Image (cartoon, rainbow, N blue to C red; front, side):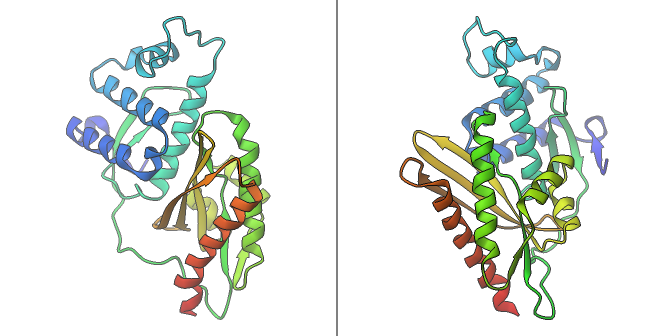
Length: 267
C-alpha cells in the first residue's frame, strides 16, 4: 500500500540501484551474512529464478554452505530471513524512508518484492520540540541482532533496558518503560507509528553484532511521527573487558549528549 507494484513502473535499473544503496548503508555494512543473502535473493529474482529460492539453495548457492546442508536440522536460513526482514524494516523506517524503491522480503517467503515508493521527501528537521519546559520523551527500541541467533536477544534486552534506566536519570529527559516499548513493538511492525503512539519525541533504535570478542553497535535517533533519521553513530567495545551495563551507560551518555545539545539547549 502507498507505492506502485513492480509491473507498474519499477524497472531493473531502479532495483539494482536500490540494492547498491542498501548494501552501502551503515545498517547492512555491519552484517556480511545478511548483505550476501539480500544480494543473492534480489539478483536471483532479477534472473527469473525466484521459484528456486528455497532454504537449501539459499544456504548452498547463496551462502556457500556445504552440499550436505540439511534445512530440517539447521534453522539458520529462517533466522537470517527474520533478521533480514527486521533490518529492512529498520532501514526504511529511518535512513531509507524516502528512497525511490522499496525492496522487502514478505513473511513466509524468500522471494523479494520490489515497489516504487511514493513518499515525498521533506526538509530535514529536528524531532518535535518540547514546549513549555516539557521534557524530551525517548523510547528505546530493542536493537536488532546481526548474528542470526536468538541467544543474543537476552543480552540485547539487558543492554536496552539498562540504556533506558541510565537515560531516565538525566535532567530534562523522560523515558518510556522499555518493557512497554518492547511489548508494543512485538505487536506492530511500524517503528515510527509505535514511537508516535507512545508519545515519544525521539525513538532510539539500532543493531548489534558480536565479532571476535568485539561488540559493535549501530545506533540511530529517529524522529517519531516523521521517521526522519536525525542522527546515527557506530561504535565498538571490547566484549570481554566491558559489562553490558557499562556499555549501556556509555551509550546512554552519548545519546543524552546529542539530545541535550540539539533539543534541550533549544528551550
